[in-house]
Image 1 (cartoon, protein in one colour):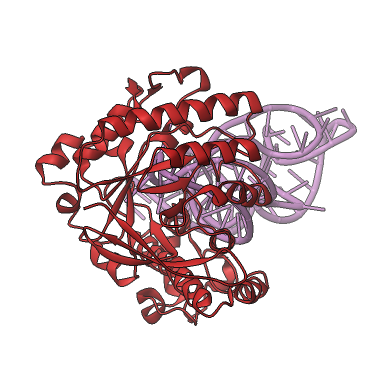
Image 2 (cartoon, rainbow, N blue to C red):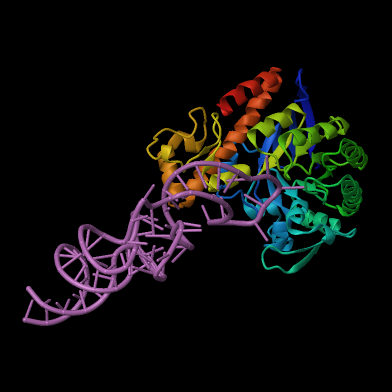
Length: 369
RNA sequence: GCGAUUAUGGUGAAGUGGUUAACACGCUAGGUUGUGGUCCUAGUAUGCGUGGGUUCGAUCCCCACUAAUCGCC
């Protein structure tokens, strides 16, 4: 079956909304943070650990799985869920963002995108149809339309052209999509231009997707601009479909996104910074490698309920990171993902009690202290 | 006791008779937003074993001392 978004409650003072998303692999509440598992694994975490931190859904990547091990292998394994032994919902990103980082503007043509493999430099060509067909085989619960993700800043002329192309690609992808149990999302682009965001949103919604995402964010723009990009698109998205803001995962950005009506977020930040020794805490982000934690035998965050915080000290985690033991990255990843998911849990409570704005004020006060 | 060799930062080391002593690691501090899986950026010896000498000038040349390593007795 296709996913179904159930709007439970709208917050009084903001556009924040509480909902439940039903999928083939269970239901989860929104707003929700979605951990990134590019290559069919959320780096260093087992599926059991993902369930434990309250992860409602995870993201895997079409481009990376297309190259290795290849969608046919995953198809033979019985689909992505069986292949990676993950029993919750999975969303696959379309590969558009990899194109953004691997291809040059001149390599983007009407039919698709020419670019070089990040593994061996071999020439590759990806089309909207291929992206959807690969995702059909991966058998994720939600597939994303193949889009172009322009950088920031882009000229108005280029962005207009890009938005039109992304719309044509969305139509082409939708035509070949043929997995009955898989939902398909459209992606709104338009950069920092209000009328292009509006146009992109209206035209994408006309194509009637199962959900909508806002893309083209987190590509170098400042926070204010990113929030405006959300504001320009949200009014034109239907209330009865789920909304996903792509690539955003800084705690403050998640709060601002929820206030603006976003339901799902994804981001590599919690796992990437974990591998580099950083942890989110209620009192701001910390670098566990700092000398001040050498003899700090307290947990990362005394308000946190995660496995890491219940069992390990900063001094121990610092030691593991300093000597490059992977268990350190795992402990920090568990904590950072739990931190963001707990944040969305708190935001859900704030929506229930119509206290989203005061929650934000209190959070910022401590986080920036 | 004798002989040889060597002595440069936390470590391994490069180097030159004359402005700011290479590089790497480590360490210290930042960065990271639909992941190109240990990455990127910056800082880190007021000093070249100790004491004398030669020289306008010595980490670099000479002498002594000290220490380490190897060999011999």
